[in-house]
Length: 103
Image (cartoon, rainbow, N blue to C red; front, side, top):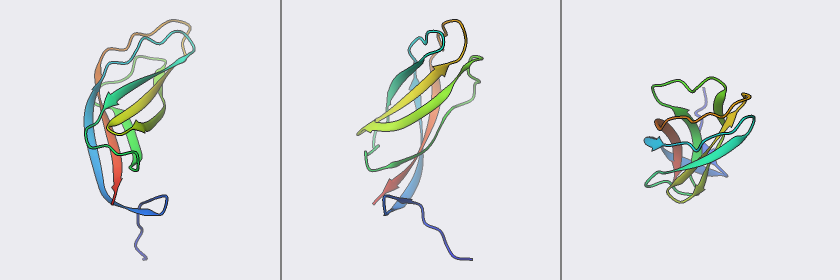
């Protein structure tokens, strides 16, 4: 079977890395989304964001991740969506950020 390479815009990923960061999401009003950022030392804008998930604990019912991106060097932005009729104040939690570094 031929080998596969993980690429980012034609650049071959040299390393897959998982980071754990604490995120204290902003209050999310009913039926809206909010973007929270976290500092991830070593993250580059040329890296590829592979996965973002909340570590160890479930979200409050009606809240979930709808988008994530590397918004600047050392910074990841995570967008949470509240699909309920009431506001949600999610407590601070650890998130796992998985990225593919490119050479």
